[in-house]
Length: 495
Ligand SMILES: *Cc1c(COP(=O)(O)O)cnc(C)c1O
Image 1 (cartoon, rainbow, N blue to C red):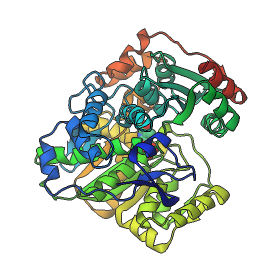
Image 2: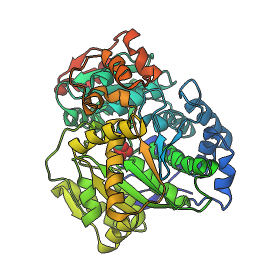
Image 3: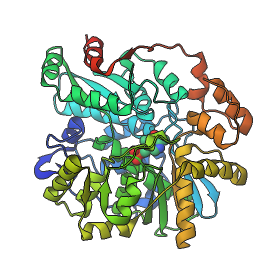
């Protein structure tokens, strides 16, 4: 099975090439030309397996130039007990008879990004070897918070890699900033940028497209690459946990093989929910995918009307990892639903670039609506949902997960559809103490790491170890840069 770009399927790539290159030269995203199907007895077989074995099994179906043994080793390393605080890795918690919560934040940085970013470094370094790349890769990341820390933790001390993260100086939570400024490892760098996330992101994109910089770095034995969710190596590890969740439902006798479920995902860049769509395409009986947004509800409108329109106000919300107006991974869905019409996809993406908007064909819109339902949660409803979940179910959830529960509630009230639903929980509530405490009606809030203690006292829930130990860590990175000077930060880092 080979891989193609969403904008030009005439060129064929091996999985290792697709992962090493990340983004296609034509601006498109790589995906496998066909989606593999699970054999009839696969789900039943996987019920008996550990999470690591399930990962190995599923990833083998997509990565033909990796041996099962290689993939097994990566899964053991990525999801070992030194990285994840529960042996299940992605445990499924029963909320009520119809609702299950898939906790994706038990990894080293307490957000779901770990599920992919613990795996990606193994896939990437192996891909580079397979492609006989001699240079050292330098991963550049612009982050609004979660991706940066997860990438730092994933790539720290990985041989033949370096990683440099830029975050907006006043744009991340206190806990997120501390997580990054205390990062350990000998190949890591972190710098704040004066400005907002867009400034950091634009700065990084400019560095990527600078041919002189590329040449200068090549002479020193480096090349630049990215770890954001346009890389197929980040989507694939996420497919695993949706299949794994269905197996766990079977193991708990909550469903019999073949029973339908719905899945509800708090969505930003469309990477996480796209992985759920792949699980469905592979044969997991997922009936409906509920796409939950915050006030930046560009996807809610797209699913309802078929028009994607980023020409709208941008809101800063309590669920910052979903404050996104361009959901890059939607491009992969358009390719899949148009049956691989690369010219059409390229055309939509050009329109998006030039006018900020495009309208898909009736046929694509109908296919989207057959599977997806969109909805969004206001700031007030998000806060109210955190409070209700705590009161009613004694279950503390973060702001992003609350958006999903709120949208699921709206969906059920509107449709009466009570199909068993898996809600993706994407971050530990302790990453967003400030907003969570606010939602629980605490107005006198502590600051810095004392926020963690306060949330523990108010709820009786223990903060995850990687956050609880932040207060004992030394700040290693307190430098900041003007956005015009980001290039010298890179060249100093790669001396
Ligand atoms: C990144 C992130 C999301 C959004 O995921 P996408 O794959 O971009 O849709 C949701 N919640 C949290 C906590 C995140 O870090």
